[in-house]
Amino acid sequence: MLTSCALRAPMTDTAAGSGRMAKPGGLVVDLHCHWESRPVMERMHAEADRLGKVSLNVGSDLTREVNKRQMAAIRPQMESIDRRLEDMDRMGIDIQAVANFPPQMYYWADTEVAAEVFPQMNDDMAANLIAQVPDRFVGMGNVPLQDTELAIAELRRVITELGFRGIQIACRVEDEELGAVRLEPFWAEVEKLGAVVVIHSSGHDNKRRLNHHYLINVVGHPIEGAMAASHLIFSGVMERHPDLKIVLVHGGGYLPAYAARMDHAYHAREDVRENLPRPPGEYLRRFHLDTVVFAEDQLGFLIDKYGADHIVLGTDYPYDMGETDPMGLIRRTVGDDEQTVAAIAGGNAARLLGL
Image 1 (tube, helix red, strand yellow):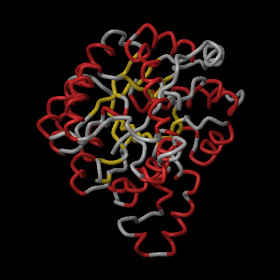
Image 2 (cartoon, helix red, strand yellow; image 1 turned 45 degrees about the vertical axis):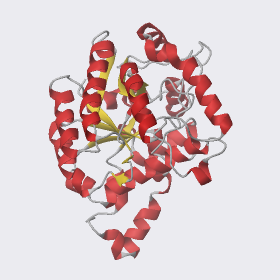
Image 3 (cartoon, helix red, strand yellow; image 1 turned 135 degrees about the vertical axis):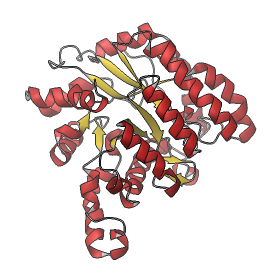
Image 4 (tube, one colour; image 1 turned 30 degrees about the vertical axis):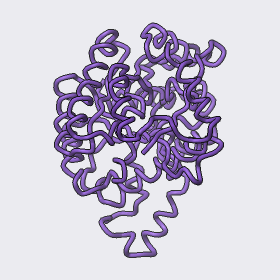
């Protein structure tokens, strides 16, 4: 599956100026942000060309041109720790839980290649980002889900050896859903280790319908997030593994806003009830949702329906589809309820990550 995460121009003081003033008393933790492993990216260019997996080569001609320009504009944020820290300070972020950016979830790679590049990416992040400023960065690993045994082995390594607090995975593994039977041992190991899993969409591969107006991201990302959560629910993964700690980015996509349709179907049809002793909406409440929804009424809805204890701050740093004033959004939504502000801004994430 190809991705189309357009990237934003460098952040300005105006765009993120309210962060420090809006900070709560506790930690502020960003659970949705990205970093690029440049050595692996350079290595995988040839492999991607060989297999026809050209990253960001999707959308209209204009979209591809915008992506190309903004890839260049974002380079300082991806490569400079000092620049990243400056942006974090402006936004009021104390800690970033950092994951590779979506094109580096190389699930299309051959097994032999994946066995080399996924550990290389994780080691690169551990040495060249996390270890440089360990009080500001937490690692979220990258595992080769195209091979279950490899994925489990790398999951164990990043948690037990590198000291990462979790992993980031895509909404599906090429054409395979996250509820696939072969991934059952993987989910069992995630639960056993207590690792946080951030599920991040990578656009959508329906080029015919989403090829224009950047719909591959604007609409595609929320669709993919909704589909990933749905498959984890209806396949029974969430029933079999009640202690999973899963974060759905982009506010969980479209599913949280229309979950009642699932529950209606559950009561109306026996094929919907298969594998599920409880209505699907109950399982949806086990997920954590991030704040990258851009509007107070959207964030307020998620808080009211799913509980402030299941909402975590996210920025999607440093992309143009991210939130540059996360504390401002939380404050405008919650108001003067300091306990709720503190929970959403970092308390919930700190609890999940074991900070």
